[in-house]
Image (tube, rainbow, N blue to C red):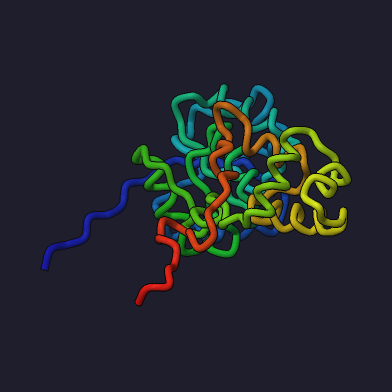
Length: 227
């Protein structure tokens, strides 16, 4: 039986506020080959704190899209290293935002113990690592034809009342269709939906609003009366 080779030590720069999650991260790192090279608060890391001692930065705490300057500045100051974020689960727009700002790996707080070591090692080996449950949330669930019609008119700039008049339905029904569509897309407002669909570089594209023929779903032919 061959002996298992010891895992290589990887120096980690821990960027974290004082929090229960940061304490859990330190505990999970004990016994692994993940050595803490230094610890810094987000404010320190965003300043002139020397980051070169680390091969991977482990950023602990909520992913708040309002703090985009912190992550973008962190990436600009750490261009050749890798960044892993550990947070509570977030919605797909925030996931895309984090990846666009240079996050190389994501760890959900409820999977910390089993995912910390393999995620950091994979990212250190130049792999991109995301939780499996991100995939279905990153791809919007099927929109109904009414939801597609309402979203198309939102993109055109129509109000709910104008959409209701064009579709011959009530304004409350329009709101219901849009609220359901927003949940499927992982957004919270008209503006977010517009950006998610129409952004020329990062958007989903208006093709997701194509009307599906009756009986046609996911490429299956429509039903006929023949047996």
